[in-house]
Length: 254
Image 1: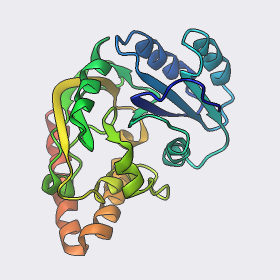
Image 2 (image 1 turned 90 degrees about the horizontal axis):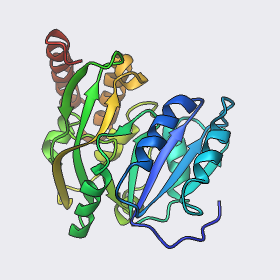
Image 3 (image 1 turned 90 degrees about the vertical axis):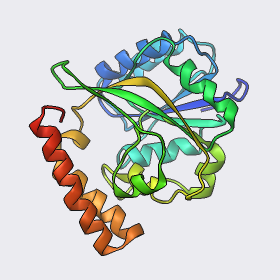
């Protein structure tokens, strides 16, 4: 993966594994964006479903070196994203799922405009849908150090993280299968500089393992919280998170 283009403002990191159909939809939504100061790093787990051919076709539709391709066996999404940290050249990093799509053609421009603040973390909202296409809710609160230690309150897909913050805090712990991003947030300092947009940036379909294996999600959340908060606070948060999930399930929002 060579680099000949100027350093972009945004590096978008997407991990893929045999999901060419969903990736095609994401690439189409990226092609519609009015904002152009980005590079895309596709971090593939040696897919065998035609992903490489799909990427090659889309590379021809963008200026040279806008789509960077790295394919090799990995240990999952966080291992792939960690590989991307060493390849990304942007001032801000964005982590997006291969099955996500942008909410509107102006979505990337709306959140990228906030990089002028120089904030360490730039958050927004996302629109969540059921696998059958039914809209569920908009989700994503501003960064709040105390609330985030209780549970994930920000919409992490599509957020922007300043490169210097990643270098300071370190890479994801790839021993987590689902919640390495949450464990990473628990390392962030209390005085973090953050800005938030109330606009939804991505359309996220709740079909992945983080939405279908809720027991594993809460187990990993408890593990991350116990590492950073201790046993008693983590146990209290575990009970509260189950109660919140039960309420969302009961009213049809989960």
